[in-house]
Image (cartoon, rainbow, N blue to C red; front, side, top):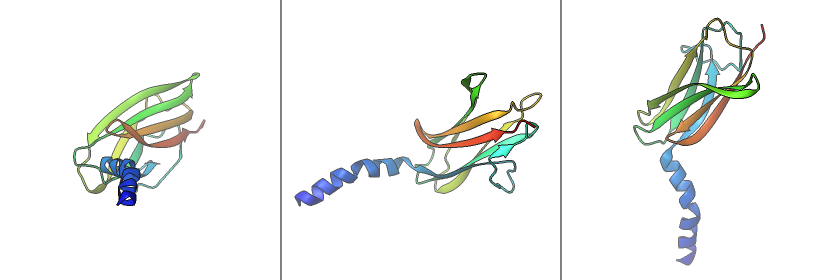
Length: 130
């Protein structure tokens, strides 16, 4: 009995994390239709998509995407944030950002994906110089 109690206590944090859900996969793409993964885009890319496969999260869990330019002009700069509600089950949650005017600045970017207030995944991509 003591072993059963100790085992349940040891597993409690893992079970609590499962209750919050998880992001199994997160990718960047240039197409909402094909969802083909890309890690690099031209500066004229009209729109960049991020898709997050969310699973085992309670219905209506907040799923947030925070778009960050890494070390652009010497510092990380958050330039967009969007939150949506998870519909339940296991499904792809899409996020997108349209090309800034006149074009994307060359460099490294990341999108941090949160389930409620917990960072669940980070997706990185690059905007090429040409």
